[in-house]
Amino acid sequence: MRIGPLERRVLEALWRLEKSARVRDLQPAFPDIAYTTLMTTLDRLYRKGVLDRAAEGQAFAYRPCLTRAETAFSFLLDEVGPVDEATLSELERLVRARRRSLREQS
Image (tube, rainbow, N blue to C red):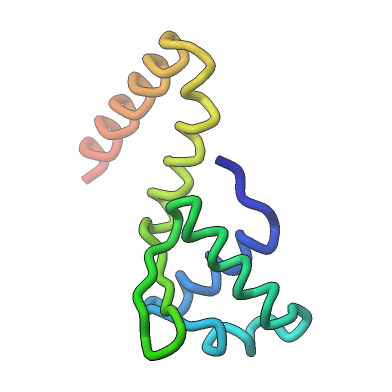
């Protein structure tokens, strides 16, 4: 799954807020973007499974499903997954090596 530049900006804004937000809550951070464009972008991220949403009155409040790190890792796996088993195995080896290194540092 790919996300576009505006989707990335919206996701970053939600992570900064650290709480659920409606379109009108995010609008001040996007003065150059039409309200309906922002609403469509949030809905698109929801349909991609990147955001959760809950009804708040007549609007939806959105929040990220994953942290920044989890999202990056998820996108990486989506890109690498179709490549081959050997690439996934190498990634797994690198992750184990990095964990070992972090444990040794602490």
